[in-house]
Image 1: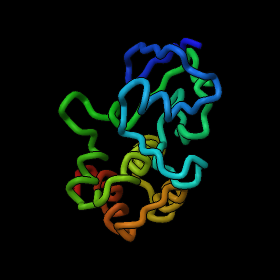
Image 2 (image 1 turned 90 degrees about the vertical axis):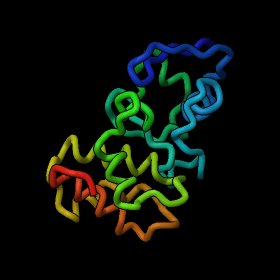
Image 3 (image 1 turned 60 degrees about the horizontal axis):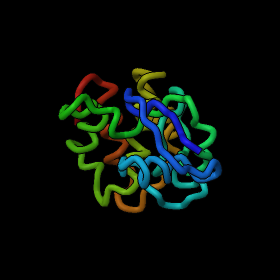
Length: 155
């Protein structure tokens, strides 16, 4: 099938897509958007989180056919050209990026939280990020990054 989807504000199409292959595979392998990471392929780690029609989803669990005609925003699409989104910049400044594998999903989850709750409590931050696993940071720097953006700056 030919998949027609708007990604990061741009209409894109991918040919010879099997309807059941994952949106993550299409993004990374067919469309050259490697930001979302392929870690567990079971929706358990959150590394592949993207927005699908403004709702965060694990791209590994979305069949490509389900994305037909829809709008996807990846971690790459949060930046404005060469200017990082405040959440992305805060993750860098706070040292919340270590190996980087979990970072795209955490950034999208934090971005979503801050769009819904501009000044979240620590409990709300932890709840919003609960579906994202990180093996390197111990989470404190990640929480610091989200707190900093919520307070109107970057870490």
